[in-house]
Image (tube, rainbow, N blue to C red; front, side, top):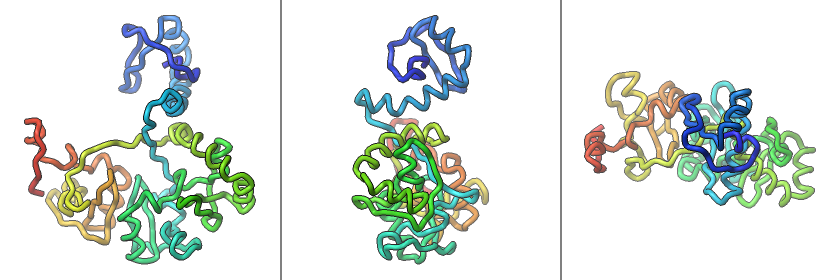
Length: 279
């Protein structure tokens, strides 16, 4: 742990370490452990910030971290339609009646057609770098964006703080892109991003729980069919909800409402099998 804070990897002594915040943190030796204990919070923050880049540098597949630029209501892109950047080729405010959720944020669209296009391939239309300014990312900073300042770069939506920052990006776009991509993982961790998860979800044609509302089990206490107007994409599958309130609750805390065992039968999982469910 202490070595990671110094941006290097070293072997550990299995008997030297402690449980911190529910996490097992091991140390190289007693000397590094003593240094660690002098500023546990500060050193742990440095280790967390360094870890994604260390993984990449040493050949490990980098686990994606989710950090989305959104307002207090959880709305991304300041309410602008991400699909419109491609179809209309301009920044276009979305309509609150056409929404879906992706990676812990709510996106708004100008039409049901745009919403459905996004749901089919959210990774294509969601903005790069969580919707933060691309130029600032290349300088290792997180900065707010102006929705009308954008570029489609190799099929990806990149947003900028101002026209001046967009021009700075275009002075050397290849270099800016490489730097922004390199800086993004550690910045996402440092600013509270959450690690992506790999799960096996029980889904029929991409629809989880046969279209039933996962939040309704908690709030209404019964199996309730969801509606195609209220949807969220999570873990690569679509969840439907009975109302906007349930959708908002899911977006705020998807881990709470996503069914255990990927929505497969709990008893079958205890027998080391996968079986379908009756909602």
